[in-house]
Image (cartoon, rainbow, N blue to C red; front, side, top):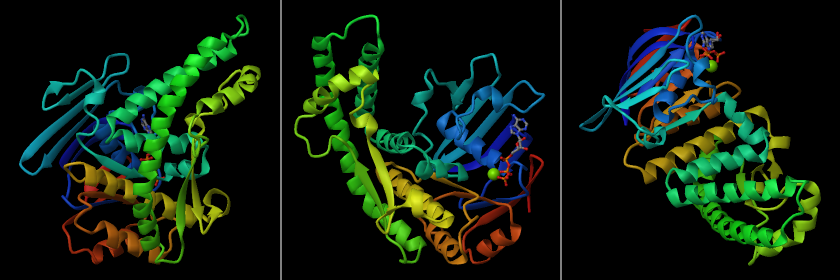
Length: 366
Ligand SMILES: Nc1ncnc2c1ncn2[C@@H]1O[C@H](COP(=O)(O)OP(=O)(O)OP(=O)(O)O)[C@@H](O)[C@H]1O
Ligand SMILES: [Mg+2]
């Protein structure tokens, strides 16, 4: 999938923009706070019906104005898609594909696959396990609807169990807990199995990208940790914790406690990794996600690289550029504060490209 053109009105600090893109490489440079990330965020919004950092829609409308419009014109071979989004705080948001309104936003997800690499992703490594589970769940759900259904079911039962445990007014009904434990065990087992399979197929690709970017100097690993590993009947896990759970008032064991640990040469990246190594890990992770998505889908996702070169040495930057210039990475959007940097990248580029300058929310082609 390729976006030919975007039209923006009142999105964050962008009052008006009408941009025609290169089908391969699009670079944006400009000083801090000028609107580079906001531009990528507009692209992200048109794919996911929400912004990258999950801000409420009302905060996306330019201050001092009362509505915002995003319009993207896409192409995939012969097929054309026009995606329209109108946000007016206080009113229902309008999201249309080829002038026809969606009844549910979720119907749109997946039509325009997109992978974004952003400085905000560092929370995937540095943050709590919830962030990493959310990443894995998002990637797996995109190709396995049964996984998503089971995940929703598991969380519903978990909530029910937790509210029973929290309720101080009624004595806990152990026979009801037996039923809930049974359901958590069954669903949790499938979730665990699917997460395990995913990591097994994802890991070699992730490691290969990391090794390419770091020029073979470092070995990265992604280790799946779960209380469901190596147990045949997880009900025993829940029953062994039951009395403690009653005191705690929540469910202390289950796949909702799973974690995915990033290791660099056998040490926890979160603790011992340098900033550049953290960044390398995130980029390798997202490129692996890209490859995974591209393999399963019909079309290459858009690839958005926000400020990725900061903290990386010249060798790593060169490797990344060589990687994403390959034909399997379709259309790319790169931002940086430094024009000189982008010029150097583009000088070696054999493909079609466009270079834009962003200043105070206004974007111009150079
Ligand atoms: N709703 C809004 N209305 C007006 N301006 C906004 C709104 N939301 C954010 N902004 C402005 O957008 C600017 C940030 O833009 P953005 O994050 O795209 O900058 P950037 O070019 O990516 O900078 P950096 O190089 O620091 O990453 C800030 O000046 C912020 O005040
Ligand atoms: Mg930015």
